[in-house]
Length: 574
Image 1 (cartoon, helix red, strand yellow):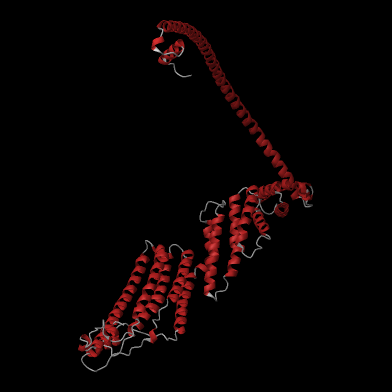
Image 2 (cartoon, helix red, strand yellow; image 1 turned 45 degrees about the vertical axis):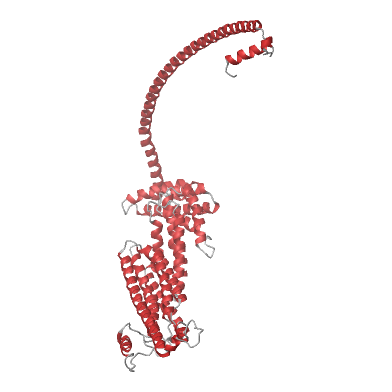
């Protein structure tokens, strides 16, 4: 309902009383006055009615409030009474419980010696049967298959008692008890195997609980492990069978054995040191092909590490490094000599790749020494050539413009090294990883930088003509520099992505950086020397052309049509 507006009410009342006629000429104030008086009377009546209604509702609310207050008071009184009753009952229950416990202790103090006496009497009775020469134990619980568990409990206790008896008088009884002990133990294991074949977990649990007091409990666990693995590894890839087998067996172990964590640990240990180790040894038995051997070792170790990660969800004792130790143990025969095989293979691979490349170029690798008599003769010729006709310069051999640099060879060597770093990271011990990475990187630097890049730079230097050539020089050293830069960028990328992360915060990091820096500086020195010689040869040839072929008349042609360049200039900038 909208809020009441006096102005609107007066306007509506005036409009109705005048009939909507607002003409001043016909306006009758008397009618409007009567309408207002009647409206005021109506409002007064409505006010009185509303006031009476409010008074009646207030009275009802006061009565309701009084009733509720009385009810709340009654409920509070009842709650206090209930709490008092609860306290009383609690004290009575505590008193009764104390009496019951005391009575139970009294009954137990009376019943325990009595039970022990009954148990001792029963054991003495069975022990007496083993003392008889006619082997009285051939009857009773020891021959009833349905009482095998009861017989197991008796023979286990008799076996413990027999261990404390003196030798001589009780020797035969001791032997008979030991014989029956072994028979019952074998029977229990046989029953466990039968229940396992039938999938009867409850019987397996009962038998395992009985055998837990026998010496053959370990045999029970071993039998379970062997039975669980029968027919399990049928796939070519053994790793695909292990995790599902462990998941199935873990459910059974949790329901059957009282010490599931220890049993699960032994189960996994048996797989690792048994079938898995045999599988690994069979795949790694042939070392005649180092490349295949290293690749297989890396794959098997990676799969084993992944398997260990998958199996870590099972509870197998308190040792967090249990699976890691098992992995290192089964691979120890191959991890110990790993680095020697890796470095020997990588060194041989570098030699094979480089030799194959040089053979494809029909090139027999030579021994060079930077500087020496060769550069001395070259420098002397550069100084004497312009002043005399003496020629003591070394023979220039450009090998048909071949740079003897190959990005394909470099990529091949870098890829082999990258794989070696990956294997090294996985197969090396954390304490030995930096040292092993440094050795592999040293082999890469020797094969790629020294035997390939530096050798190509030496050949390129010897192919540069002297600074005062008599014929147009053939310069190929710029191609050598371009290829050197490309290969070096690949090496730098490999170092940053694959080597440096393995050496961070280790002394070997600075050692490898220093070696790389020294080789880089040597390479830059040779490239700078080659570029200087190449530019000197070009400048010398330009000077020779200009001095021998350029004529003064070339600058003042007789014809008016001046050519843009002379033939000699065109030849120079060609």
